[in-house]
Image 1 (cartoon, rainbow, N blue to C red):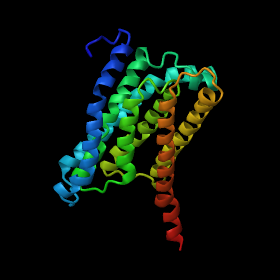
Image 2: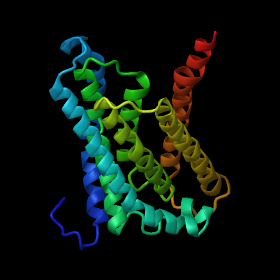
Image 3: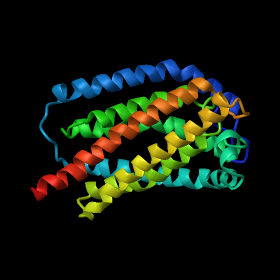
Image 4: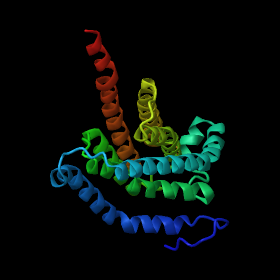
Amino acid sequence: MSMNKSAEEDFDLTAALEWVREQRLKVLGVAVVYVLFVQLGPRLLGTTKSSSSALRVATVFWNAANGAFSMWMLAQVTPAFLRAASRGWTYSICVVDDYYTGPTGRAAFLFVLSKLWELGDTVLLVIGGRPVRFLHWYHHAIVLLQVWWTYVDGGACVRWATWMNVAVHSAMYPYFAMHALGMRLPRWTARCITTAQIAQFLVGSIVLAFVFREAILLYRPCDTDPVAIAAHLFVYLSFLVLFSHFFYVSYVNKNKSKTI
């Protein structure tokens, strides 16, 4: 796939889709290596927590760069998202319109690619001797496979998933960057970000449930694929449960323990 087209040219969806399909087995291999790295990396590198200035700078830069990318992505997909939403709920979840073409299509393609480099979040944790929660590596590995295997086939409702994800990441990554800089942030900041993530998965599950109802139960016209919808719904519900449990353990139950 040629990546040398000028910004003025229309995004070539056919070429992008063909390229993504050609890379899927490689991406599956990356996911397997990633999980092995999470399990074996701490043993190979040692469990001593690293506090080197180089790692700190890399962490700050990494999160700041991802934050900037997320904000740029948000600016790219928001106009099309709002146009679709203004035409009604059913339209926004069932009519693809221009989501996969033009500037928005290019952003959607980059969104798929971004799930590869976001694995760097985990690499920094392992190198730094930080514990990697199941929630963390499961989330990264599953989302990577999810977006590469359902690119385009996910249909119109993917505009909701993409918009919510980049919106949350626009706040999350800058927070991580400031935390890595040693800035003292209000305790409620982390809680708000986790709440936003839970809201993302709750809304996503509702969207997918409505798409399932329209396309599968009522046989109404809806741009989607039944297999992709089932996969998305499984992923979103699992994230909803895991992130809700994390919120309870980290904030609710922790606060109760302090009052006893």
